[in-house]
Image 1 (cartoon, helix red, strand yellow):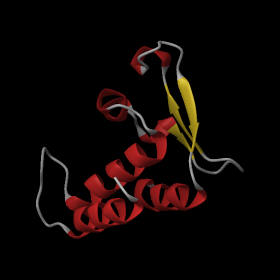
Image 2 (tube, one colour):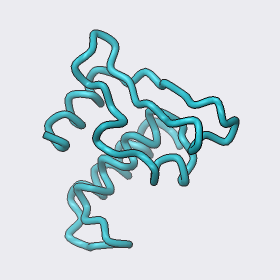
Image 3 (cartoon, one colour):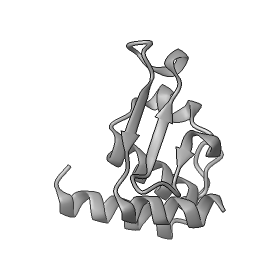
Image 4 (cartoon, helix red, strand yellow):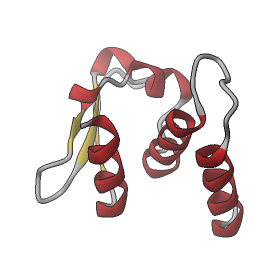
Amino acid sequence: LTADELRRLLLAAKQSKRVYRGLDGLARYHLYLVAASTGFRASALASLTPESFDLDDTCPVACLAARNDKSRKGRVQPLPRDVARALKAYLG
């Protein structure tokens, strides 16, 4: 996706009133935000919990457990600060 296409996707999800696969628009917005920021696969994204994120650190991160990582090594993926702020507000 181009940056403009991603912005439009995020905005459409955020404004959506539709529930899809148990996720409302706001939940999908945050899911897409994490997906675009981390590059994690769908199964890895599905394994994330609020405890998977360290959003208070000087370098906010999403942590993927080894059992959920395709390489089985685990992964710590830095997050942009604006993404971390959005997640902190949503998860808090």
